[in-house]
Length: 70
Image (cartoon, rainbow, N blue to C red; front, side):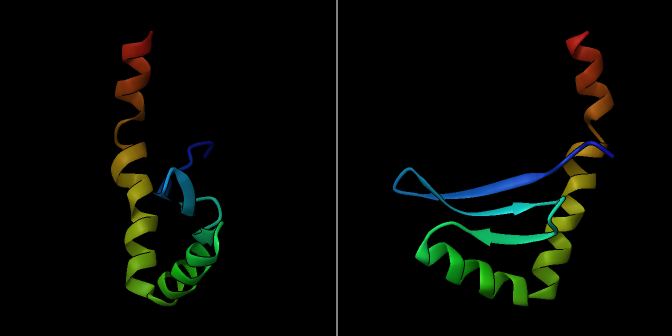
């Protein structure tokens, strides 16, 4: 429950757009990023794929990574 999947997009070394599984949508941080986020948030299939990434990357690997750290 405490795991969060974040995917950030950068342009010219500045974070432009971010998807966060806790928010459940894209958020823009620049003028172009706000436009991208608005367009991507309208696409239900893109949002569902991004929401599924938490299970694909985080939940399936957290125990393995945790054991390797110990």
